[in-house]
Image (cartoon, rainbow, N blue to C red):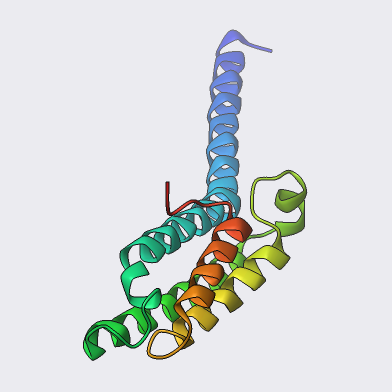
Length: 146
């Protein structure tokens, strides 16, 4: 084997190795890391909404109709986003077992509770709505009050 051939072979293998590492990293990022990050961001948005709209769902039927409509829409949208972001995560059961993502059953129940909360903005019981908020916090491991 000539010296020039060794140099070319080494260079080619180095380039192919780099391409393989880059491609593998991109696949892991796009199929695993980004969906988990999107779900985490969605949970953060839920926390934000539970804080921002607390005065609306804690006192159902008291606020301005437009504000109650907005609250209802946002809470329902957060529920659907949480469900959709969860369905996109590949190997969810594995990440659930590793404690990286919330349990699927907790996500489903949190989504249901967000919809119940959304349905109780115009009329309902403020105390029950606060219980729903607390339930959502516990299911998603978030805190909205200190």
